[in-house]
Amino acid sequence: MSNTYFDTPERDLSRNKMSLRIRKVGNRKIQTLKAPSGKSAGLQHLIEFEAEVQGDEPNLEKVDDKKLRKFLGKLMKSRGLGHSFSTEFTRSSRIVEFARSKIEVCVDVGKITAGEKEMPISEVELELIEGQADKLPKLALELNKKYAVRTESRSKANRAYDLLENRLAKPLKAEKISLTPEQSLEDAFQFVVRSCLTQIRGNECAVQDGSDSEGVHQMRIGLRRLLTALRAFRPVLKRKRFDYLKSTAAWAQNELGAARDWDVFREHTVPQLIAAGRDQRIVTWLDKQSVGMQRDSYDRARALLVDSRYNAFVLQLTEWLNTGGFISNKARRGQRKGHLAKLAGEMLEAHDKKLRGLASRLDSLSTEELHRLRLKAKQMRYQAEFFQGLYSKSDARRLVKSITGIQDVLGSLNDAVVAENLMNDVKSVLTRPGDLRQLTAAQTMLNQHMSDCIAKDRKRIRKVVKGYIKLEKIWV
Image (cartoon, rainbow, N blue to C red; front, side, top):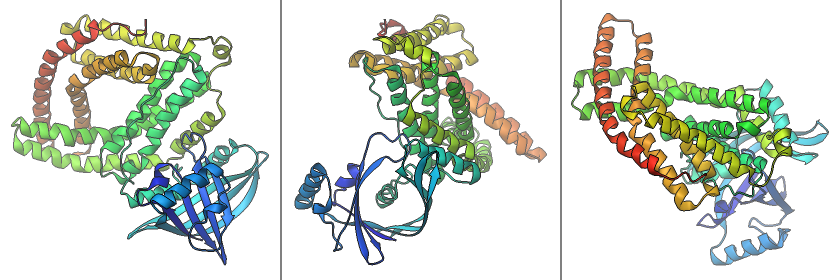
């Protein structure tokens, strides 16, 4: 199959998550317009308008939707529709009957060409012909059990645009969440989880590429946000779904952990050691040892993306987002107006109590307790970001900013814990006595450096915590 895609020079179709192509199949030319239909949560949900055309350029009269036809007509007149990229692939397909539904299973092998850039195509595409949409992820789950595959949330056109605009490995940060007091618990939870899954999946390419450490960082944040959402809604969730999602998300986060730790060490700790005037020979030796460890940690991170457990997790979560049913029957029956605000208040109050408890004895906190203070602040920050739409913008902004301040000021504590664990990893692979002596010297240097950083943080944290304590509880 040969396909030519069209768009304006400003990529208006791409920005509106649409694609327009002409496919050559033998002597026939088939025009297809695809437009988004609802939220995807990791899989593609599109409406299609397909018609046979005679020429090599789009025929908008063949688009069987008045609004879309008008939209495309305006674009063509004002900016013009030209060739953007092409795809060529061979397709093998068959219709299978699965769980009372008919699904077309297509195996495509070929390439995407965008200017002088190329990308291979090697994929299995599932398209519902007849039946229920939730059967697609179910069939994908069955395929995942038998074959080493990874799920792909982007269409061929999406990947081509990413290739064309050098976005393939661009890390994706979390989108802002705006819940409303009128939302049901089910709707609110799905809204939050969709955001988390979008961030997780949106960083897979960056993790695979490995050239930007922010990819691993943002994917881990997505998983951590998902874990925070699970804890926040735990009182009203179905127990089995909670247990499965919590254990699998924690496992996936751990698989990325080593890569993130080595990134932090090489990009932050090593430059700090140099800037502080530490022994250059030891720093150089330490950085040299970390190169191989970092490389191995990225191999482990990439392995996660093709792990059947991870892909089953993505597919299962997608299916549940499509079908609902996260909230327990008991919680659904007892749901009243304002239940979401009540749940948010209870969660924020619980975190606030823990933060204030630690803050009340700030001067006597051990290093481990200060680290716990930072972790509690991070968890509360994510929850505050989830629920900020339930409160006034200014109050929510002040709360998030204050909590983030606690987290940021205590950053050296996290670096210290990470460095200690990494030195143990280095020790496990050293064999020569000389290297072990170097490691001992490096550990002594790191301990001194981290102690100095933590001492500075202790002085700064008082002011930040004091500012948080003065804030009014917006959830009361």
